[in-house]
Amino acid sequence: QVQLVESGGRLVQAGGSLRLSCAASGRTFNSYPMGWFRQAPGKKRELVAAISWSSGSTYYADSVKGQFTISRDNAKNTVYLQMNSLKPEDTAVYYCAAKSKGRGMATLRGEYDYWGQGTQVTVSS
Image (cartoon, rainbow, N blue to C red; front, top):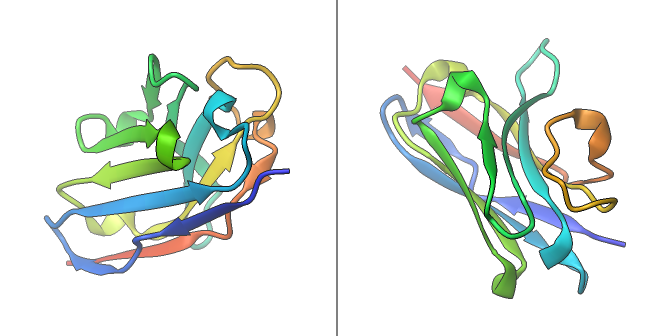
């Protein structure tokens, strides 16, 4: 069983930066590929970034390439999402997720089986 707890979301002005953190419980965290999703009001939950268990591979949605950076510290059981140059359209609830079956990086929502409760990011114009 894995529990994920996100933090770091808040109100920020356009152009600002935030770093989200996702703390995981469980001894096997460092073998799990991880992802960050977001869901804006009235929209589907979408993957914004993913990382392999070893940090050797990363994936970014086109909408955030060059703007967001995903990383992880397996010694701290934590995955991060650094978000720069934030725009009002980045406003959403951000969720981290873990894939417990297989070590391949996951880019589909259905591949993830553990989810955090989400953290709200609001970007004002």
